[in-house]
Length: 79
Image (tube, rainbow, N blue to C red; front, side, top):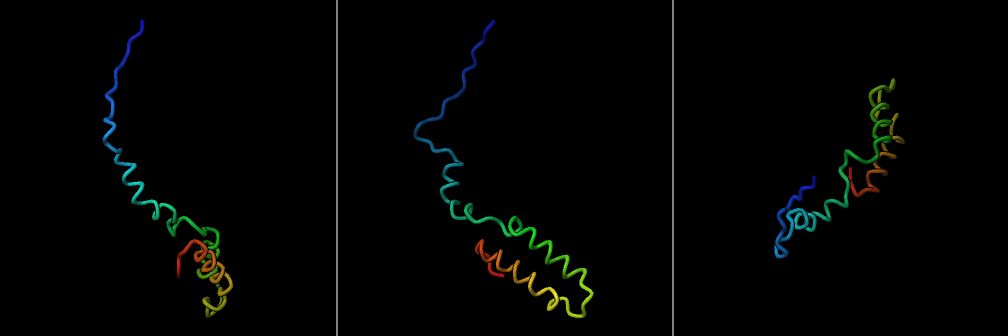
C-alpha cells in the first residue's frame, strides 16, 4: 500500500527568513565568540593566577598572560 503526501510549496517570491538574517550577520558569524577561542591558554592563565604561591601572581604569570593576550588578539579581541 503506498500513499503520497503533498507538502506545501514555497512561493518563489518569498525569501527564507534564515537567508535574510544570514546575509546581515555574515560579519558577526565570521568572528567567533571570545569564550570559544584560546581555551588552553585561558585555562593555563587561570591555573597560574589561582594557584601561584607568589606574593605577586600577576608578575609571576606574565608570560602565560601575554600568550593568552596574543592568542586573543589573533582572533581580533583586544584585552
